[in-house]
Amino acid sequence: MEKSKQLPAINVIKDVQQYLYDSSINRKGLSYSEILALTRKIRRGTCTTKHEVLAYDLKGIGLEIIYLTFPFFWQDIAVTYPEDIYSLLEVMPQQNHLALAILAHNSQIIVDITWDHSLEQAGFTVPKIGEEIVDTPLAVRPFANPVVHRTIDERAEYLRKRWEETPNYQEIGLFYLALNNWLLGIRSK
Image (cartoon, rainbow, N blue to C red; front, side, top):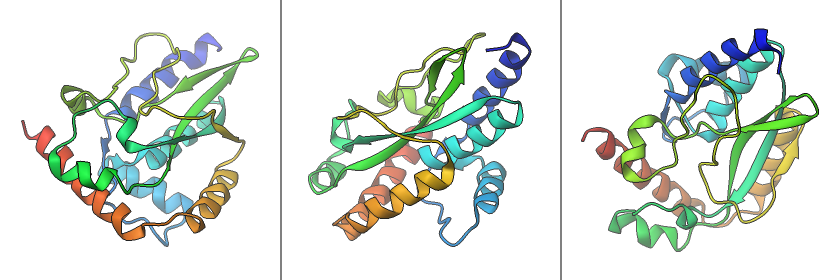
């Protein structure tokens, strides 16, 4: 990566990482630009919305980005969930996690800034962003290689198709509600 882009990229990564992880915000029906604007304004988002903002900003400083969708199960994340979440984990279908890869000098640097720093105390993987951009650990434990998307539209279409195949809509909603409540409790400690 060019030295002139390194510091601006690090600053963008650090800033977006501070957005709180929160899947309770309803963004349905919003355009891509409206989703970016809302996520920036409230400084909260999911892995998807946080990484969409990050990708947009990194592209704005001239970096080439690809989107990586990792299939995972919530129960495979190495944290101790509260009892009310364990029963919901049993019925949660596969989910799709978004991280990014920055393409530079015939290599790619994987960047995952899903979890905000306040969640580290509960065991979530929160990367330390230093003075150089390097691969970060993933926020989830994928069970397969990522699906690579060159554009955000390509990823959106992939997710639309996956959603059509996904059972347990009600349980998914209940899980994310319980997850968000738990994360609020962690942050208040």
